[in-house]
Image (tube, rainbow, N blue to C red; front, side, top):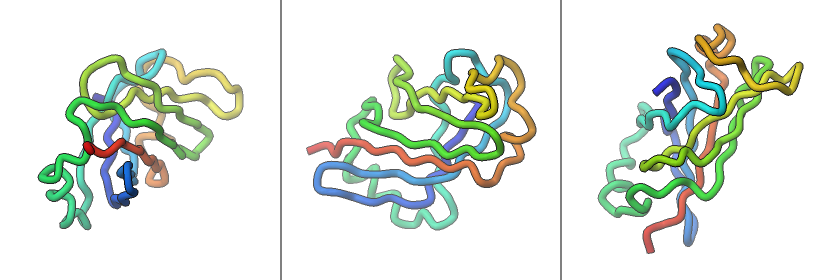
Length: 126
């Protein structure tokens, strides 16, 4: 797992729940999109235990939509990972060329980025 989404806020709609947070990168990028990363909870996550207790996200369900804002000359897109879990794969593009990031170590512009953000929208378990 080369990327981590640290959730800093949750919002709940009638039928959805949205997780917002910052992305961190380490290790190597895989062509075609890095398989599902890891999900963590930030410092202001006091209310997050109820997320698991209420079971508002179907076990093993992928998000119904997602948005990525990488900055630093890169763009991202979430893709279904094809595996079990609640996180999608992340495909990264070089903004200047429009081409996919080459396989290999993540560039310093991403590993040192503090501005990379993402949001994922899940259907509630209703």
